[in-house]
Amino acid sequence: MTYQLPDLPYAYYALEPFIDKETMQIHHDKHHATYVEKLNASIEECNGCSDKSIEELLLSIHQIPEHVRQAVINNGGGHANHSLYWIIMGANGKKQPEGKLADDIKTTFGSFDQFKAELTAQAISRFGSGWAWLNVSEKGQLHIETTINQDSPLLKGHKPLLCLDVWEHAYYLKYKNKRADYIEAWWNVVNWNKVEELYNQFKK
Ligand code: MN
Image (spheres, rainbow, N blue to C red):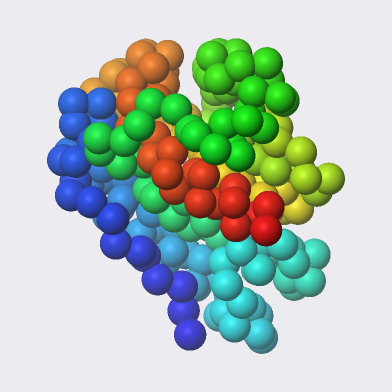
């Protein structure tokens, strides 16, 4: 078995005007596809690796043979991170979460707006390439974090709920060097129904 590039759950143009069609095409068909390709190549000599889901593979990173471990962190992370990124976005979604997730965001961060401001600030100040996240910690607490390169929060046992790609390839065609403008636009395409679903599954 090999890892597969998942289809986008919507059309390339679906997130316009916030994220443009060409960026989505290159990001999904070229960048994500390359992570999947390189992941499959790197685990060829690792017995049992591809029997695991991508999440299981990253959660058990210390069992991966050392000579391929960094390649799995980079390309397996790239695969897992992008797979989540596509599904936590969508068109015509609501502006804020509801239910348990909304309540716990309020308890943890003070308000939805404070949460949004904090994640935005961390995403803007993530130096170089990486991601900003809303995750659940190993103790079950909501928290914001950033990761470098394609490192996945799963490597630390954190459960990812929401991810924001701040690699330049995610925004450069439309926003050039203006990462903050991309981030502001990105909040319009968050699929809160999906994020709630992930949180509720975890909370069960
Ligand atoms: Mn990316």
